[in-house]
Image (cartoon, rainbow, N blue to C red; front, side, top):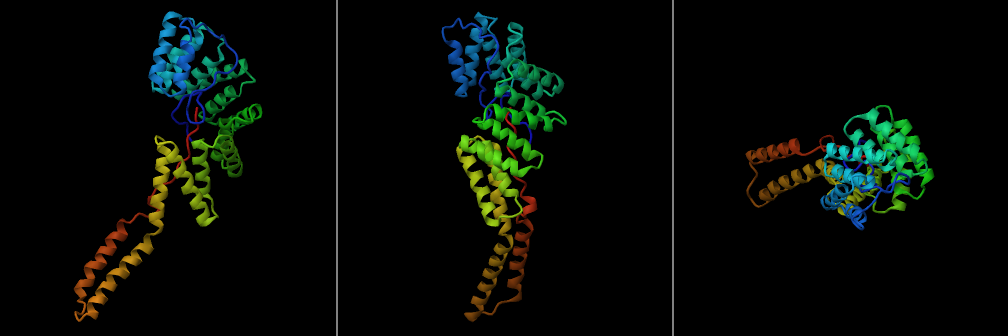
Length: 318
């Protein structure tokens, strides 16, 4: 399970995060521009949100929330250096603004600057120790660090205790348990995340992966996995992981039907020869050879389960 694309402080599907309590509120000289920009960000209209945030900071360079919002839009559009610059400006305006520290930490983690990232995330948690979003951001940063999974799991569990109704917290616990082979815990966490948020596509995808990889259950587990992948693909048409998994499952279905398909083909071909013989035209040995060659070629290129690829876990949303 790897860290997926999306904002470092994003929700279960990489969406905008709620700002944790703490930090200076900042001024909004635009008469509600900050709220409008946040609303646009929540609707995934990143470019328009970025324009509004940029207008606010141009008029008020000391507005830490606006700089932080601009950092999020830069991040979500793939501009990591620009996002880092905006986060640094937010902290220059207010060094104790926890949300900016968490965004900065997520961006640094995405840039591979792990030590700096964890320092920023830990400082954010220190400033707002009761904010579950802060602990989730730290857990995600730890998950991306070498050897950080055990601590990440503990931090994610603490976030669940702080916010037991937060689906993204349960998902993160499940994803970390899944990564370390604790499948029963992972299944329970994914199931709880889906109870709280039935539209949580990452949890549904990973739960389907668990069903697919179970040793026992036969057709039932296969059916549950296929149904789950199809639901995710239908819910989020842009989810590449879901599309890949659905295609892998369908190829697996074709692969499992390999020998049955070849047997039916062979039966049909020999039946056609026998039918011709029954009508007074005996089959010629030369008629059978090209049919056998055709079946051999099909058997050679028919996909096997080992060639269809493995289903993928959804990545941990930052």
